[in-house]
Length: 237
Image (cartoon, rainbow, N blue to C red; front, side, top):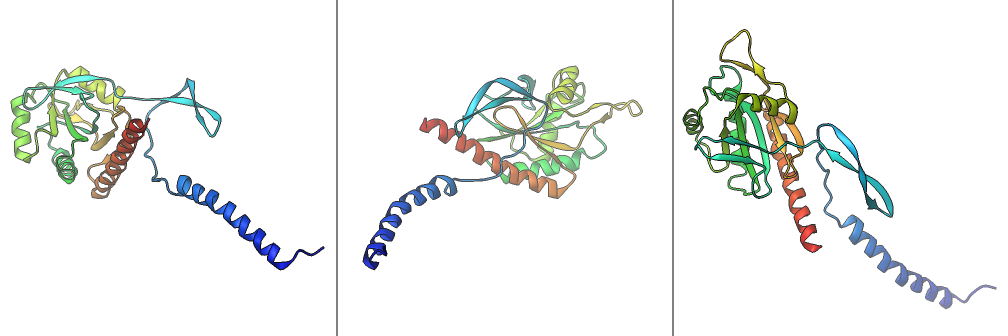
């Protein structure tokens, strides 16, 4: 039996009224989220014995490679602690003041990145000397002054050389060593390393490439958004 037209019309209206709220809720919860592509996490990984739940499914947690805690001396003869007392995004590079290679160009790009974020309190920059026997605090202070950097955000560090070389290889996963053919010189990388507040490596960028430095600037913004979102989520809980 064919239903009267007015009855079909009423049924369609009722179905629409029931469906719209659900559709709007889906749009707000799924499409309305602040979505961005999260940065990768570098270094060896392990599967943990703990789990987290995603859509009622238990997913094993991952243990990521992290930079160990360390202390060095900065250009102002003050102790530099990693991690800092408050959560910080840190950009790190390895250099030495007597470098006759690419160090000046590398630190020029480091300066450009540092200046891009001005006085943003979420960020700090650290340049670690591979030549601490020569790069005493007063030498590093003069080096920093020559670059006209903000000494409250960009730290030039020295300390025990064995500790620094081990940090480079074991923690930052970069090779660095004295140059056997050129006394007073070191073989090292021109990479800038992006570290998140959880001490994980989130990116490597060749400072000899302006495009790579620009990419670092963009990905720092992503990491800032990630950190602020994480803090907001914790506060809501």
